[in-house]
Length: 615
Ligand code: AGP
Image 1 (cartoon, rainbow, N blue to C red):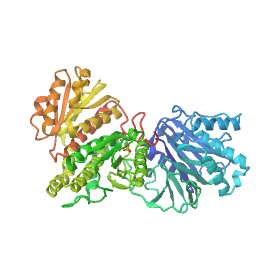
Image 2 (cartoon, rainbow, N blue to C red):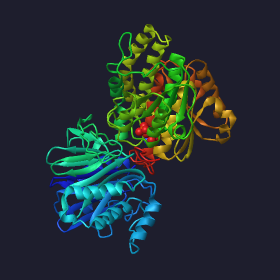
Image 3 (tube, helix red, strand yellow):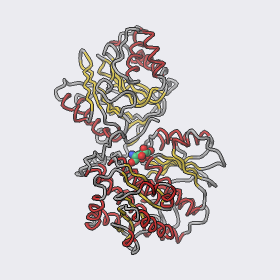
Image 4 (spheres, rainbow, N blue to C red):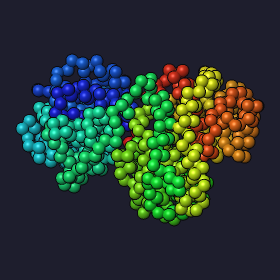
């Protein structure tokens, strides 16, 4: 979604705002803008398209000590300069940036029109209304904005916030007042940092890394004022909040490219480190440690979206296989509006960002029904991470590329840890099983590193890539634990190369999808174990008989696949439960190569944003 950023108390405001936008561009990138508080008027610059279109416009701006900025993923109104944030009140003396959706926009627009018939809305956005509403409150209270006391301004701000329905992370600056920024958060993330001289606010931690050591993570409904000397936070009831700053979980550099051409490539290559970090301290000789299972469930439910959902599907296989406990998997957006019933279940929410609106709402729906919740989350300071009853942080580090890669590996390992812990509780996963798994898990990072640097695999990937030239449709097939990899592989390809790729369970082909297979259709078959593997070999034959170009991804000990495919890519052999992770990395690399061949921006694919913080 959108990203907001604000700085007060620093003469390098323009430079810091642009730096912050660069760090947040993955949240939304169809337009951007900044607004500086400077002397007689607010200085606003906005541009459509990538941030590089805005930068030339801010090169020679006058110095300012206070400003706000925004990078947009359009929800209300096309990506045009008029719809780009910041938005002004009608007298251009108030500027607002907003992430979220104001759901009572129509009613508010009418109310403003009634109060001020002459008003001309500059944009199609819901966000602009907030600036008008604040001006109306200032006029009604007859305060002199330039000299008003903070409490007078705060009471007007609260009156505006009480009128808003929906989700919002907000920052507001006022002409002639370069000593503060007003802020608020409701169902959209916002963090604040203050070092006694400089205040910063941002949509997420990745843009304050290197600027500060600790931050205040605002809670739902928090609002207040960030001045050059302090931050005052109030809760939804207007009570002052004694907030406690938390140390930043990430270091400078982790959110930077570090010499890689794209974040996606960097994050693919970080996966060996993710395996080490995610499992560190969590596997002992006879125990799975580092997180708690709130109770001994007889039924589990898993909720997530996109890649997190695909990781949840693999977790379902693992949990049912290792603990024999049944699992129901739902897309979070379905679960939240469904009527989850049945026996008291443990609900597992999987999310990289920990801010996905649907997953957050699904977890809240579960808690309203008295179901205990466990979060498998990457950003441990996120809203989901702070709301669940128990947290399993996957320690993947900042994932900037919009297409999730290393987080999937962490989410799957998180699901495996839960499965093994539940298996121990159910006495169906024994000490020898754990030690056998542990031995392979310790070798997995090295196997991954070997595979990532294997020249033969790189050559095979290049050959596989040729099958996709001038193709706009593709299939990924898997069975059992490789079916989630088929779904994830298809998601990766479609979201960064814009090829229409579908992931199917091999057994589903004959029930319809086979009709789409024609001469030259690229089909990626992902190996599985046992009888499922043999069935996939049969699927490969089926689609080849109809002219498909079959790429088979399997392990080095498989000597059957060679006679069943046009191209076979073999990865190192590891534990059955870990093998899908290696297959998935091949799918990630293949999608990346194909997308780049097609000239796509793999870090910022069209129409997408990294964290879907609105419905
Ligand atoms: C994955 O490549 C996508 N960018 C997207 O499906 C993502 O996984 C989904 O939006 C869930 O995000 P979350 O893990 O932050 O909740």
